[in-house]
Image (cartoon, rainbow, N blue to C red; front, side, top):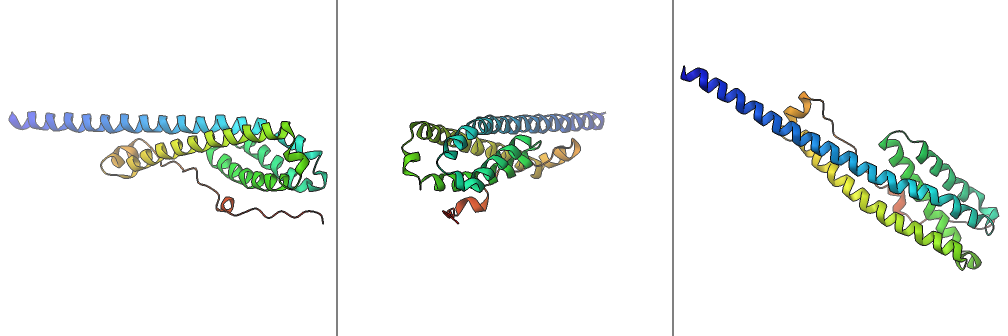
Length: 185
């Protein structure tokens, strides 16, 4: 009789532990999705701002169309991305194109003095700051979820219920390089 109580107690304890880890994994997955949603909001704000920046610069730097084309190309690919991985790649490429874009703008003193350009540049700077904060939050939530998915004993519950590790939002290594801009051909 005592053995049957002990078996029941062990089954109940295992059930409680599984419920605990399952709920913790679900909460962490929700936080990851919330983090990605925050990134998406700032990516959209940046995407909405970019056409205004490009139009402002076009009048000053018509012969630099390849730089402007790259910015628009990566903006469009970012908007068309259907997965976080696609959006991360397009965002990294857009960051590189924007670096070249602003390096180009430095060569035009009239443009640098244009109030509309200056305001758009400030708006983009604020959005980029918010986007970086959102990326840090997202990566922190991904780190927590991925740890739970891979560490014993929660990895057992994760594999039983199909929880998977999520990708980090990583910076493109090219974005650390100073852009090379050529003027004239």
